[in-house]
Image 1 (tube, rainbow, N blue to C red):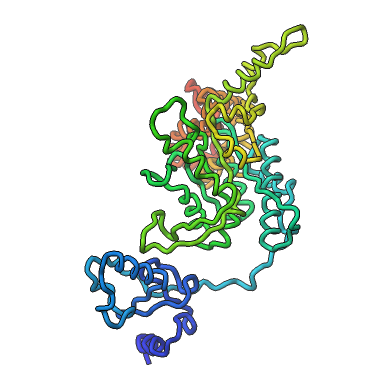
Image 2 (cartoon, rainbow, N blue to C red):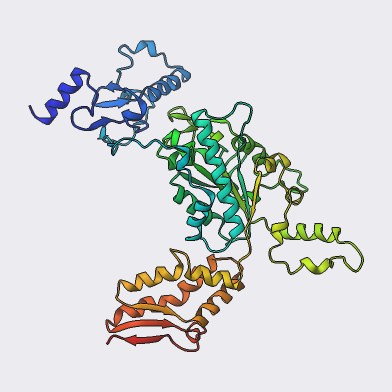
Length: 462
């Protein structure tokens, strides 16, 4: 009996694919495997459909006015013959079953890393921002203790632990997004990064609020249980501030804050699986956001001026009074932000109340810029050193060259992002010329080369 006859025999016997040869059926519409959807309906031509897609197909046909009773043999009819039915591209009808390696590990509350352990791991990748890393480590630790207790029903009924969502405030390039990415990588949890600028009120062109949860579900491989323990980072949160003195409907400002309230506090939402749009043919999944950690970040331009204005009003008179211009040169004035400042900026109090942990990041100075170049595990200079190491060339930077790079990055006022832009500029000729000569052993970047008044020091082999 050949392979084709075996498949026909197995289908006639009613066995589910995967029991004999390690394969399982996948849905013709949503492409989910049988291990996710449950038993599938077998169609003529070797097509299989899950019950969710089959039901949605029937619902859409009923709404169009088609009388399904005229079609005998439902649901085993050939959907490809229906008028107006668009067939997807041909796809394999079976896929390999993902074998689980060993027994699944059961996690206990002792497996949650302590705050000092989380911060120690962050220190290897993120330079500076000590207070921010400390606050985030404690908030994440408390959040996952709460998630574990609620999942295992060990919490005291009289004491309910509230969510510890985080609001990150810092100038552009200070490391907000990078800090969250590193945190998700270290904790091995799914991470979804959404942009608040694309969110609009329901019914308007743009992304619905539930799209942020849909991205997390996709990052978790459509595993609802894993997604419900993930992290959602909503960037550019300052862009949904309430517009001042506007006569038009604010569909991407205050209304978005209002609709985000239910997600931040914890609610059950239905999101499409495998697609960013809701329609009759897309299967839906129910996700509980109660144990999802939400981190909102934004640069909040002009917030510093609001803080200075408040501090100057509180300055008293007399010999011991603080000078009104004492805050003009304060580079870390964001650390004195309060909820009243954010409300003046345009954030509604209900939204701020659901972000109890407020973290501010410092503006980078010259010392931090030099440390970012050298210290992290994946520092920018280490990346270039590794690239040239493949050509058996050693790359070095003298201290004055590092000072020049840090000074130029500060002038651009875009934070750590300016470092890569500067390095890409002057390393272009180095990366182009060095592979030409196999006798080059060491390249030392000097300040005169960066200032275009000289060249790098080159040492030949031997």
